[in-house]
Image 1: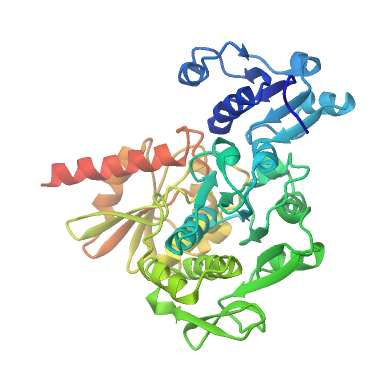
Image 2: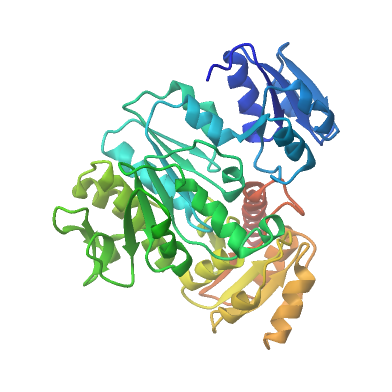
Length: 455
């Protein structure tokens, strides 16, 4: 459809909410920009959007703005059951997400990756493999720059690798990736989606428009994810670190094997993968499979797997102080992610956890301590819940603090030489921070300050 001359209501002025009005303006679209936050709270965003074709309606809900729009673009933070969306639907006004709009404007094939955990690492790794092979590749989504920011510039021979969340998938209509991957599905965001069935259904939307010449990549080891293979018309391939497959990507005799119908291809030994942890082996299998679908040679895939050092805020090594190693896993925003981080630790570990409550259970987190976690420091909105769960599970060495800086000092006082301090909150960051990145930077700054003091 042509957007020229139309009026768009853009709701939510976070990252994608800033990029979207700019792109719409370039398409000759009049924009009404709305956010529940006030002008003072959004000063930086407004400066970025200094354009006469943007009308700001701030500090209010958008219910009274709906009739003024030809279509509405919502931020991932806006729930799909919001009253203004129901009003728009009743009036026949289209409501879409930023990734939906971006995909309509993008001429390049899209690799879209979702899952409860591992998205950022897998998106980054896939992008690095494609770039190393010489393919013009743009990595976007929740990982950094919004997809919409680059979509119109991409050419048919480019590739877009996009991290996609369940929140973004709530408002798609024609979004159709060439490769859609679901890495895993575990309990998360139930404060938004209410039930696991709703959450799973939202993840499955990533491939609802895929056709027989498209591909869907799924985790054979994750029951909820594997079951989605019957719900698509696309070509389905699986990856597994636990069992041998006839087709897809798997581990056999300690080697990564790929097969897309032309015989087995050896990529490299699992010991060659630079980033630690069984969860990262799964990420490597998925990335290798997607890169091979795009025609990347096995040798190139192997080279990147051997050198890729991971992403910031995901089991990121920070420093050593008095033989205690500090790791920043601020991207551990749910219990399953933090369990994987704990399992990746070698040696006794002091865990720092806590943050915004997403209605998650912490039972499995505490059970995963399994002699690895010696003490837990808690903070944030979920501190009481973590303390209560730990004590119910018989784990008594729990200490409450008020800030990340205090948590670092307390954790160091409890750690012994040759042990670890792991900052993996198992919760969202929004009770205390703008996002997990800010939270991670605060942790790293606190570690740096502690080291300077120790020296």
